[in-house]
Amino acid sequence: MSVETCGKLLSRLARIRPRLLPVKIDCSYARRSFTSELKGRQQIRPLDGVKVLDLTRVLAGPFATMILGDLGAEVIKVERPGPGDDTRAWGPPFVGKESAYFLSVNRNKKSIAVNLKDPSGAKLVTELARCCDILVENYLPGKLEEMGLGYKHLSEVAPQLIYCSITGYGQTGPQSHKPGYDSIASAVSGMMHITGPEDGAPVRPGVAMTDLATGLYAQGAVMAGLLQRQKTGRGLHIDCNLLSSQVACLTHIAANYLNAGKEARRWGTAHESIVPYQGFQTKDGYLIVASGNDQQFFKVCKVLGMNDLAENSKYKTNTLRVQHRKELLHLLSERFLEESTAEWLRRFEGTGVPCGPINTIQQVFSDPQVAHNGLILEMDHPTSGRITVPGPAVRFNSFEFDKPTPPPVIGQHTVEVLRDILGYSDEVINNLLASGTVFQNAVH
Image (spheres, rainbow, N blue to C red):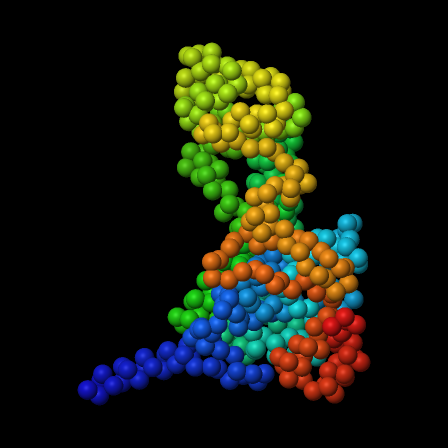
């Protein structure tokens, strides 16, 4: 082997070595690569062994970190002593002392209460960052930098860290200094403009979809960050924000304007380009019928006993039906009012026409398919007793979501984390407790 070849091999080994070996840091050995050490174990989850430092509150961030926890990550939720996460107080309804809102997005997490404004608290979080694989935060740009917890500083002391920032508008730009709120981002992004009744005012979606979409983007970006770290041996910074998430989700609505200059409008439950494709009121509720092609429209007419409409030259094609939308929908709407939702569903069964009821939330969780999909998740909470929340949306054939841990009470795991992860002595922990830098709940 030539000297040149040996040099290349040694250079290559030097580059990949950090990915293959554990890296020594102050708190413990933190493994920077996915290894085969878990092989042979049953119920291995994708993120087993991965630690997440969660500095988020409210919805987008906690939703993202909850999904990471569902996938096996150890999530350490850092909260301010006293009130903790804002959503703990967002009620009623409350289950015991915890809001249902908080309980819905904070399972599979450990809570530590730390005063980040105290230099000792910031130092503690820095040490935790050295032990973790991922940090997720949703502070205003620059706020964590003031505490010495920004990406620039932490990447120097914890180069392995995948640091994900969630903001309203991004880390830079003319609006980056503004706080992010779902309703504001929904309005600014155009989402609210296209949501609501055809002849009515803009409407906020019934759930905070901009926050939730951002949480999903953040979770996916973090997973990609883990793979990127496998290739480079180093962490990275991820910039997620509400505005970008929602504008990206405009998809074809955005493309219609960008390519054809077509401004969007509100359509209620209807579809701009397909008729009939919308909700109809029945004798006792509402039904959605999605007739996506001419054959399905003819079947709708047959079910309704209105074959004359199928034969009418004005409704022969979807293009013609869109042109004569109001007249056709008036006729269909009057017919749907004559029977109950259940009766229409019975008649449409087996026809190949997509349709479904517009369910109340009570009806959603009475649906046998919802129960079958594991979307009703029960847990025993330490202070609230038996609680029920929506379960994970995605299932894997290699493991079960069978033993979730309930959302924590504030500061439930402070001493545990300081002792077991950072290796603090009882004396150090007691001093931090006495000074108010940290707080430990009576529940632990």
